[in-house]
Image 1 (cartoon, rainbow, N blue to C red):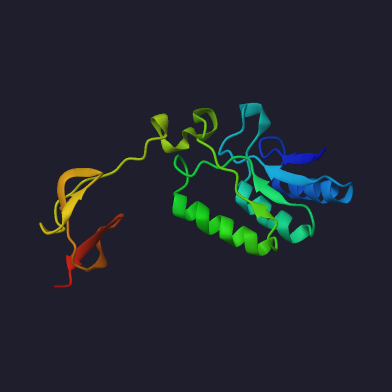
Image 2: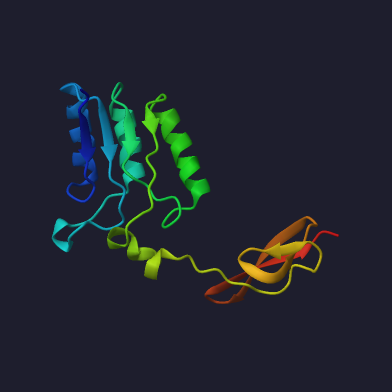
Length: 167
């Protein structure tokens, strides 16, 4: 039988969580997992520290106990590429002791991204007519030519990214 310790980010602050996982390693727990929610279950619980930051600190404070997220949602709150980058970084910091635990997310804790967790996309004209339709903007053609980008200020608080063809 294996025993695991769960760093409940909904119930303790980041420094306490790191101290708890150090203690879990000292008494022989087999694995330490961290919840990954933006909000705690109840308002009375306070806040939820960023799980990946806590895991990075835990990786540096421990030497043997395997670490894992429990569970990160790579579609609702995080871009999958960002999750992959964080997982690779933690794998290095922990000397190979990290395993990403992935899930579908829960609106109760993840509603910061909006109703139903749907990301909003904006379709706009301008990238040319060569290429194929983009999945997020039906009927819009994506250029197959390389593009360059520039950022220009359009008002005191707004910036616009302009993409132009290099051809």
